[in-house]
Image 1: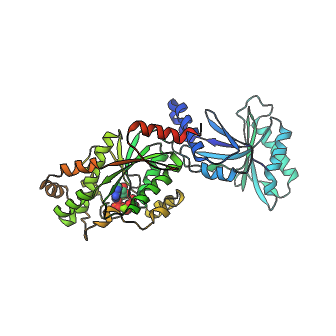
Image 2 (image 1 turned 180 degrees about the vertical axis):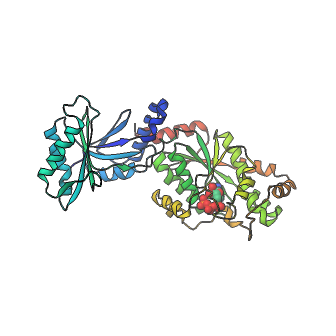
Image 3 (image 1 turned 120 degrees about the vertical axis):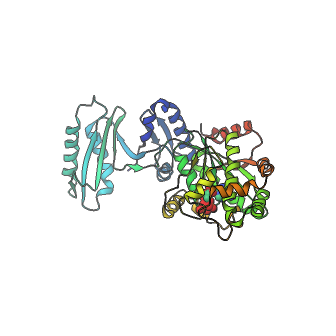
Length: 414
Ligand code: ATP
Ligand code: MG
């Protein structure tokens, strides 16, 4: 048996019908990006679904695997197509049933007939195909309530599509159909997962990473690039800003009482992120924080940290359990990279007993004792920006260069 097509369904996309054309263009481009390197297919994008025509089945397993991760795809099905003729459709059902001869199964026929010109109606078709199967396959019995598999038959103007599986995609919206957010990316497990969750909802994610050389090593930065590169495989090139945080962080550790240094460090990270977010036209800041996971991730602590910015701070993992976060990290293949043993700037300076319930008045008082503005500006000036794609890391000098590189990333797909 050879599948002729893969049908891709958009789901949620239909809700935003005003932007549909742009959405579909982005989705098509993004699917091509994800299928890069695979051959033997071409894409036909229609208003309500997409057909991936398969010239060969050599790559079909790889294609199906890749489609599972593309934002904006609700479900998809590898299908067989017959011409608009019931006898031919029966032969096609026989092909599909080649793999169902090994034991007894309960089945059900489910016909849809968007092509209202077809001679038979849905009931007729269910009966015709049902009795065909019952007559020719003694191991198969009808069970409409609890079938082991469903034979889906869709009669359309392009032909009759026949398939058993609805494979679940990640859902959401096509990449970069929403505005930008600036995500604080550490080398841990959580923040790459947070990035992925926002990307699935169509948000374009830029990264900001704080490093403190020589306390953090070049290998730690390499790990950050690797994480970003892994994320870029599904969404295309990602911009990352690297801040030299050493001086500011050292001063914080010197000047702020030790049980508050963690809170203060986070506040300064957030302050710097806010400045950059405004410059980069990001409408929100995002983090990988999850309630209760560590000392700095209590509501009291988030209250103190948020106080430095008016931008919304998105925390997609807020209420998630670690096991579920790890599950996603494993699926998106960032888990192994996150587990590489390189230090983060926060862990190096972690005080023995950080306040789990910091008080805003206290931290404001401690920070008011000194003027940190020139240190903040210095950190902002130190920012180095890179564009990370599947093919590597490129330092960015100006905006036009960024646009050019992003387009280049897609150019061989068009
Ligand atoms: P993660 O696994 O994402 O590092 P974590 O459980 O280790 O999370 P923390 O180290 O407390 O938690 O970090 C909380 C959040 O703060 C991270 O998810 C990330 O968004 C941000 N963060 C921490 N360290 C850095 C850093 N060096 N650069 C940028 N963001 C950071
Ligand atoms: Mg961390």
